[in-house]
Image (cartoon, rainbow, N blue to C red; front, top):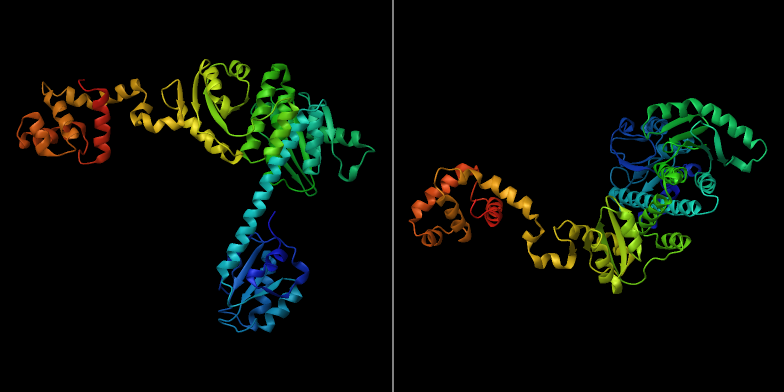
Length: 489
């Protein structure tokens, strides 16, 4: 939600002075627009705080200027003084008061850019709080899914989170569970839910006919509805009197995942456990340590305390890996992440290595470092080694990170024109000597026992055959790697 003009005007650092329109200060400010045009409205979208020094304006322009801003939906007008005008023209104060448009005086000492930065900071803070709220809501939904009521608890929780109503429908469009009525209505709730389900039946049928995991958004003057399928076993509808924000859709999607899980329980409880652990990992990465800890406690487990090491595990049987590791694990894309207490890391690495390849991070002592530790573990995992530790990568040299088979294939393809050039195998040895001598002609020619002009001719021929510039450091690096893996063809 955007900050109100009241909040912006109250910032002491800006030293803004309200001159008119005090009754409309609760309007949201979604941006700051600076303009010296006589009519800036073609460049506005609405809810902007418009700033001007009145360079082209006089009191005679006030009424028309203000009415245009009101029609366009501007949040307010900031008039800078001390440049074109020593004070805000009285005509603008009267016009703004009559139109109910907030008008603030911006002193000479306050740059317009300072107002823009302040609003931008407030917008960023509001966005951060919304995201925190979304993650907190996801945590509450996840904990609801762990209750004995299962899907019904998730539906009830979602209705409270969005301040609206929710219908959980089976594959035939019949109501499994309904929750949420504005004002806490109870009488006739079942009848109203049935009417809503009947009205949505054609839309639900369209979703099922589409055969894709899409969703529908419907809008009426006093109600906004989202309908989503839940795998092959049903769908659900969510309604609210207000349009759903991006954060609201995030919360709905989180509930959809949990409800799909509940409906697909017949496919195995292991999948349910994986999704809950994945949700816990998302909470940890978002910094919601308390919510993650409480959710894991509901599962009868606990997160490691103190320094930990992240293991990125690539295994053909994730379920077997999870069963053998006595620590918290969670799916993470195509791999499995394990949070290993640092004191037990080596034992857990050995257990994980028996099931596949493992990449281990450096120790992380703070949950805030978890994202970095996961990145380190993933980087270690991409090596060709069965077990790779991030701390050891630098000491092993860059070529240790290369798959030998892929490198040999690359080298053979790159050097093929040299090996195919008649019987002149001396091109390969000359190239090797040239690169080993860091491009110094005399040293390379002496190593080969040839005249430097002969070597220059050979290197020109190498460049022509390969279509590469041997003076390019990147080309030299590629050729050196190729010769390392394919020295003789």
